[in-house]
Every structure is written in structure tokens, then in C-alpha cells.
Length: 235
Image (cartoon, rainbow, N blue to C red; front, side):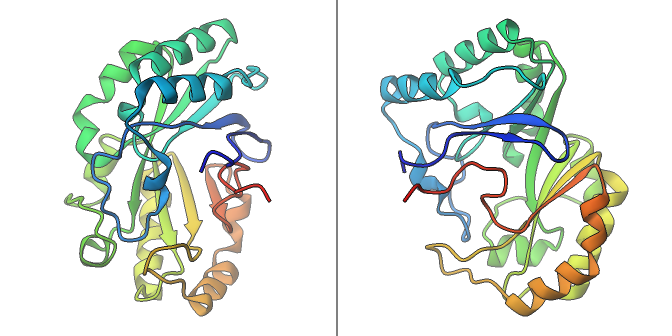
């Protein structure tokens, strides 16, 4: 996956630069819908050098940077984090976005203390329906409800348009997103190498009913998983 696009700019809502880095294997790594685990490694020296070349593209243009990898910020190499912190200081970055898996929720202050700037931590909830999240999607996260998630995370990611989902399930997810969280990302599921499949009819229903989310400044809807400009494989 070394030919993926690794740097982009999000110029619509919440303008920011975004980089896709390499890290160690995801601490969970068993989500039934995810094949991004192929984009990680164990060779730390190689990852550090690879990430260094990606980080060089950061300009600080918006003062905001999102850093993603095939897991959580906690799985990035220590040297990469150090180089990232130096870039944040040198380029005048004032806000960071990081992805974090649920099991790290009690350690968020470690990252905040390290970077010393405001950080928005994003958690992949996928859906608040516990049975679908854990039995079907194999997410491996258990919580009491949106209130508990909101205690730790200002931003969540949800998925829609999956076979087996219901309209009622999605309606509840959208309600919770808008009620409890400052930011959100709704991902329209796109078929990949896993056995989890998209539901085109459900996706079409969502696109029509929730078209108004396009005008909501706090919610980003990714109709395709590469809408942020990173991740697609170059031809």
C-alpha cells in the first residue's frame, strides 16, 4: 500500500491538512469491515523514514492538521511523534485531529500533554447498535451509550449503507451524533476486500433523507472513503 496518496488538504468544512502515516498493527485489528490493517508494519526504522517523507509535505497553511494511520495515534512510532511535534511547533499548527481506538480512552491526556495544543480525538463508533457493532462488525467496543462515549471523544465516525443495517438504526445514530458530539464523520460504506457488503438501497435512502447534513458545519459525510483525498491507490 505504499502507492497510496498520503497527503491532502480538506478545503470544505473544518479546513485542514491531512496525512496518512504508517504505524504498528492496530491494537484490535479484528474489525470485520476493515482491510486497512494491511497498511501497517513492524519495521520501525522503515516506518519512521517513510513517515518523515510524508510529514515534509505539511505547510501549516490552515493551522490545523489531521493525522491518520491504520489504527490509533498510540501505534505511531515514537520517533514519528517526536518529528510531528517539531513540525507542529515549526509550522504554527494550532489544532490536531487524531484517531483513537476505544481501549485507549483513559490515555488521551498523554497525547495532549505531549503536543500542548488542542486536540480533537476521533473514535470509530460505527454504530450505537451494540449487537450490530460487535456481532456483525466485530468492533470489540462496549459502552453504555452516547453519553459515555462523549465523556472521552468530541468526534465520532459512523458508517452507513451496510447490509444488515436498518433505517431505524441509522436514524438513531444520526440523532445521537447531532445531540452529543461537537464533530462527526459519516462514512458511506464502500465494498472492499472483506466479506462485509454495502446496501445500495439503504445508501440511496440515506443520501436523500440526510442531504441536509452537507450544510452542517460540524458533520462531514464521506460518500466515498477517499473523499478526504488520502488513501486511494494511484493508477
